Image 1 (cartoon, rainbow over the protein chains, first blue to last red):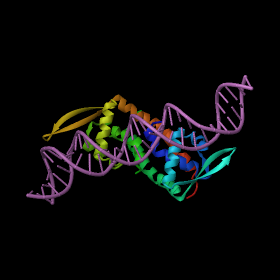
Image 2: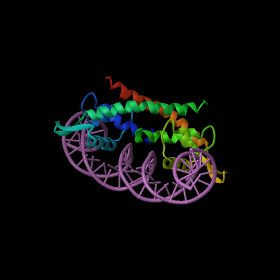
Image 3: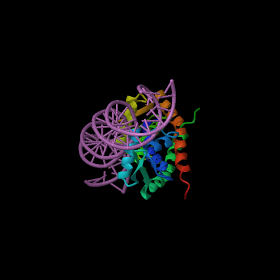
Image 4: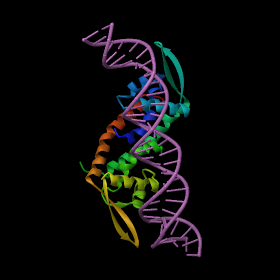
Length: 105
Length: 105
DNA sequence: ACATAATACATCGTAACACGAAGTATTATG
DNA sequence: CATAATACTTCGTGTTACGATGTATTATGT
């Protein structure tokens, strides 16, 4: 999938992956991978950014001798998803514009 | 509209705007503006990039004493639109993922 | 027993990209 | 006579996805 097309989608996918249940990096990648491919470096960059933006909080849990970082969505994060859904109307109008002018095939 | 969400859409909008009829910068902005906002610097950057990629060709026409650059879509440009339509299936699957996990409201 | 895969997280450098700002120049309009 | 509209150009900047690389532990296969 085109990298540019991904850009507006990745953040919301990550937030969606932790929306109903706190999760951690490795699991998030597995959960979203059926829908969108994301490398580890991309994911951790995004998680860090969303934390700085206050859209999620982080806490550490020991699991099998290793530390695991769990991510919990905040109200700001939920708001981000809501905004995305609002913006989707504009996205669909753009898609229709592309389709409208493209009658062949 | 979120700038990141725009990124995968702008190129295709510009190509769509010249698909059925050759057009020029200023007119392209007017034609796409009901669907997506785009500054002049953005548009001309995109046009230059699409030209380098071979997705459109350029020719100059004198119009009212001024030069006007017309843009003509190539087969590669038409292919780009086609690819976008293919990718849209993935985009919609991502959108459904976001909606599915978001049952409230 | 030993190698390989899977789990889990982190950092660095890079290239692509949208945009604001500023500039140049002509033609319409009030 | 000034301002808006038309029309294109260049520069610098901040954001971002990603590959590469590194660290470390636990499972799994043979």
